Length: 576
Image 1 (cartoon, one colour):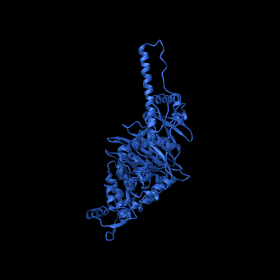
Image 2 (cartoon, helix red, strand yellow):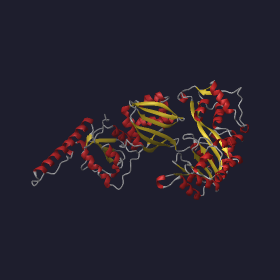
Image 3 (cartoon, rainbow, N blue to C red):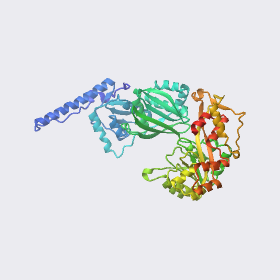
Image 4 (cartoon, rainbow, N blue to C red):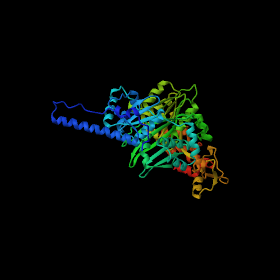
C-alpha cells in the first residue's frame, strides 16, 4: 500500500472539483451524434468517479487537471517519456513543496519515482489521484515548452549515514538483515555504502527466479553479499534507473547511465549498466573514485632492478612505454600512477581516453567520441599540435593509432599507452601484426610492462602455511630460471609461505587489497635486432629480456608470496 499522505483539501473538496463534461447536443444534431456524445459524457464521468474512489481508498487527494495551471518548472521535474510510461505528471513545485498527479500511485515504479524526487529535492511530495483523460491533456504541455530537461538526480551519502552503516554492518550477513528492514531508497544507499565499506569495485544486482541477488566484486573476485525478495525488484530497478537517468519504460534493451555520490573523501563516479535477462534486468554498478591522487608510482609493487629501470625510462623526454594485460589487470592504474609522478608545473600532460575513468588535477584529459569522428588516432593528431611533453593514449587498437603514437614518440614526446596482449614480450608482435613498421617500432619503444593483479594477504589474520607438494615443486621449477642479473635469489632451506585464515577485517576472505605482479622489458640492442629481423617470436623477445635480468610476472608473484604479501595459489590463479 502506498504511504498515506494527507489529502490536498482544496483539490479534494467536491464543490471545487470541475467535472469533465461535453457540450450539450444542439437540436440540429442527428440522433446518432447525440447518442455518441451522451455515451462519451457517461464514460468520462465514470472515469472521474473511478479516480475519486481510488483517491478515497488510498487516503489521497483527487484532482481534475483540465484547468489546473501546470508550470514549466513543475514539468521539468520528470521527463515526458517517464511521465507517459508510468501515468504521472508533476503539477506544482516550490522550494518547499512538490505535487504529482498519478493514475495509479500504488505502482512500485511510481513509488520509487516519488521517493527519488523527495530524496533529490529534499521537499515533501504530495501525491494526488487523477484520471487518464486529465493526464493526456497535461502531457500535451510538454510540446509547448522550448525544451524540457531530463530529470537530474543525485545520491548523497552523508558522513552520518556512513558512520551508521559502519557500526551496523560488520559482515555480509549484517548487510542482508539490514536490507530487509529499510525502504527502497534506503536499500540503494545501503547497498552502495556497503560496497564502499568493503572496498568493492562493482555491485551486481541480479534478478533470479525467486529472489534478487546482490553481489560485490572485491579485489577482483565476486562474492554473494545479500538477497532480496523478488517483489522488491521493480521498485529497486526503478530507483536505480531514475538515479542514472535511464528510461524507466525500456526493459528489453541494454542501457547505460551514471550519477555521482558526494562524499567528504572525494566524489565517487557511479556507472550503471542494465541488461535484460530471463527473470528481469541485470544491473551492474561500477564505483570509480573521481580523484586518485593517492596512487603513487612507488606503491605499485614494482621492485628491485625492474623499479630502477622503469623509473629511468619514464624520466626520458621521448619514446613509448606500453602496459599490457587483460581487462582488469590494472593497466590504467599503472598509467595514472606514472602520470602522477610526471605531473609537475613545468610538464604539459594531455590524455585521450575511452572513457575518462579518473580525474587528475593539473592534467588535460580528453575523451574519444567515435560517433563524432573523434577517435584515438584523430585525437593524437590534434594533441601533438598542443605542444605536450607527455601524452597518455587509452589504448592502441588499430594501425592508425599505432602509427600516430609511434610518430609522436619519435618526435620528442613521451607516450604512455596500453595494448591487449598476455605479456610484455607480446606487445612487440602485436604492434607488428597491426601493420606498424619494424624500423619505426624499434627506436620508438622504451619499455613494455606486463602485469596482473593479485590479492594481498590480510595482515590481521596472516599465518604461516605448509604448501602442497605439487605447488611447491611448481614454484621451485618456476624460480629456477631466475636470471642472475635480476639480483633475486631464493634460499629454499628457510623459505616460508603464508595465507590469511579469515577474520572480520577481511570479511573472512583471507585477503584484503591488491598489488601488481610485473615484468618490465626494457629495450636494448639485442631486442632491437630481433625486431628488425622480422622473424622473431614472443618467446625470443622474452628470452632476450631475461638474459639481462627481467623477472617474469609469475616469478615476481612467487617472490612476493615468499615475502608474505600474497599466496602461491593466488599467483598461479592469475598467471595461468
